[in-house]
Image 1 (cartoon, rainbow, N blue to C red):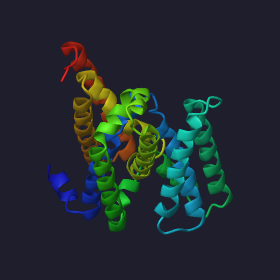
Image 2 (cartoon, rainbow, N blue to C red; image 1 turned 120 degrees about the horizontal axis):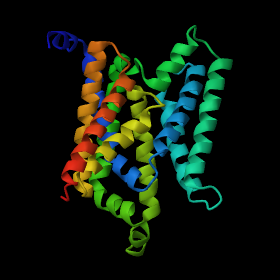
Image 3 (cartoon, rainbow, N blue to C red; image 1 turned 135 degrees about the vertical axis):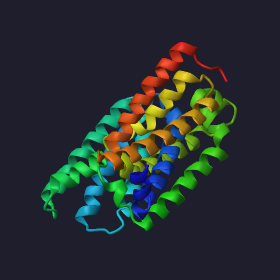
Image 4 (spheres, rainbow, N blue to C red; image 1 turned 45 degrees about the horizontal axis):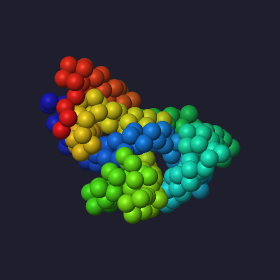
Length: 280
């Protein structure tokens, strides 16, 4: 505890904990929707797109990489949604096609136009989020706070519509719900979450941040609202625990958070098997 209290005196540690809580909360909110719609792999696809955008921003020497990363990721999310509705290219194939292409072009660009003396370290940090969460600036923290508030407000204000589209899109359309509009909104929000989460766990581990809390909560509860609330709580606890363990033990932040989430998922599976799930 003394060591932890000492570290908490440093602003970058407080920034990391604050951003970790916000990102964990946002990523778990729509994680349940993505899992139920069998579209959970979209996080991995968009994270690879964000990696390609980061490569372009690095080549252009932009001080604020968010100016490129966020628009590119949002556009890719919309394209994934549109392409996934194409009968010739199914959703999983569209995700694989876009994500692999973005990852390959991103790494190619970083190699051809490399200006860093430690290319392997930069790539590793981007893919696994090894140190980026501990090097946040006050501007990045403010951007994260603003975007997190937007994501939270969108989910709260349109909760009923998101619920309807998640469980029965055909019935929602017949009831007058503009499903295409809400699908588009969900895609954009997911893109924003992915961009935020890259600093926390890196582009290769983002899917775990979105999927694990939702799957863990589903082992215990059978109600959508209960699963969503439990998912948020578990996600925040895992993020805080992972960051604290990482700081104290000197382990990579992203990998530590995902390892904690995997252990929590295993625990929830045991609890679920013993209780049979809670229907409330």
